[in-house]
Image 1 (cartoon, rainbow, N blue to C red):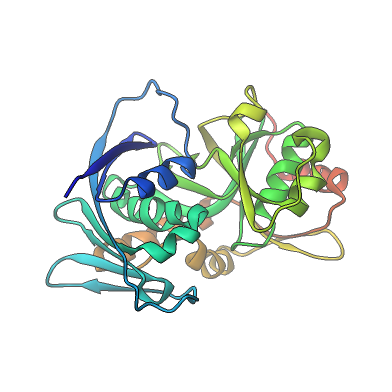
Image 2: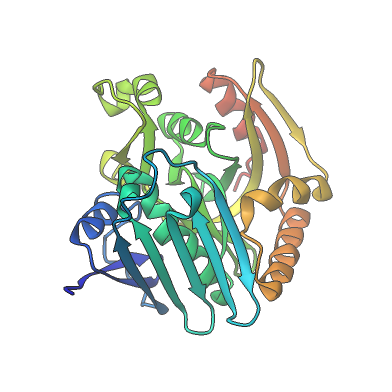
Length: 313
């Protein structure tokens, strides 16, 4: 059976993909969220991803967005399933390899396939290099990063675009990788944002007017803001976000921040990495000021509140 190949660069790592289906390569390539530019940093590691596409005609037409995971102690592997098992992923820590079986019916979830097959498995493997994934937008002012952490639908992309419009620099609207280097730093992170038609319309003055569409579409912010996209910054503050009727910025105790961030930061399964994750997150929350941010669409007032907590040189 013919095999198709593609190498994806995420941060300083190569993810070498092989599959029996060319259309899947095209979908992943089309919806790949990371910069394809050649960076000055050398390659630090290489992982393999083998994907088998099957056509199960007995599968029902509608799939439920269920996600489950379990750690296999004997194989030293993490097992992930999505969409009622229509996508099955096995991450082998020892072999630094990912195997996946994908039913063709899942191709309808084009934008999500990149996250399920590339981002989440990659985020698990780079823990070996002490990179830690977090669901967060990241904006930069005067060289320091503000993280805006929250689950899907809480407004990370909206706030990222709002602060870009207010003159901030951008690292990511959805996901970052944290690491320690004489302080807590982040690496981006996707440079393509997934926008609903409503969000796009909200910022049509800087993005242009979109056509009406359902779901989400990608926009390359690196192309839209060529001088405002960064790849790395030291973390100054973190806000856990939620839309509200009035703006409120409340400082959290470190232990409160740990509890709220734990589900946003890491996939916890491998016993060693789970302990490391908790230790890293605890150190982070005791070192970096953390806040709860309730926000509105008054972005001028939002910019004022957030600027006040950012350090000045």
